[in-house]
Image 1 (tube, rainbow, N blue to C red):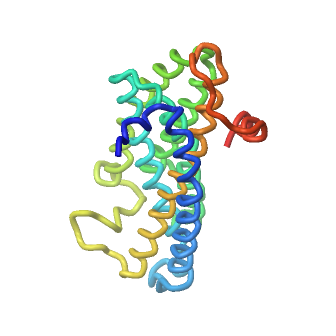
Image 2 (cartoon, one colour):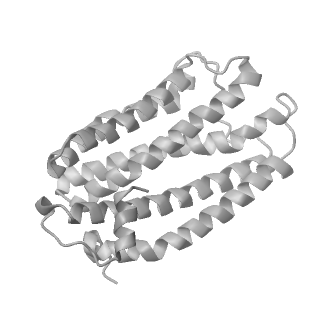
Length: 254
């Protein structure tokens, strides 16, 4: 099967439409299982009590905020290197979901920090760098929206994404590089988990559910981006066939 044909927006559009329901269903199922394991099956933490359960949302959201930015930067690099329109479009489609998970990580972190540290917010190295990541996502979205020419917007936002990716390792290693209040990694690829098996399972299931959600929403937003760009005279292509209601939905955003 020739997968390279799907690099064309016209070929990718119908494929994305077929995949969205499957990824959305997988996201709902996995997040449901993850929340059940985390809130009802996982044991109570002997130090933090029941308040620790917010980490089953907080940690996967924080992981996704970083993973999606790296993925967005990779697509941006491909777009700049190969002059691939689809890569720029994927960068545009990922950004809002990355911003959502970054905000969710900060919000749940504040909910966890209040009973643990006695404050909703502290200028901790990890929290501050994660907040900067949120500003990066928002800045990229606003930068693209401020430039009318699509090609210029693509290049500018791609450069912005590539420069900003330096913040991701700073977030990850901040607890090692500086003396912070934030606890170290509970799950590591190079060491045995510091948590009970049920806790680790719940966290990984939630992470997989967030991945499925990210793919479903990114595909849906990608379809909208294709429609929006195809309706612009400077794009030089015709929009894929769709009914009037779908065009209006895409014009309103996802």
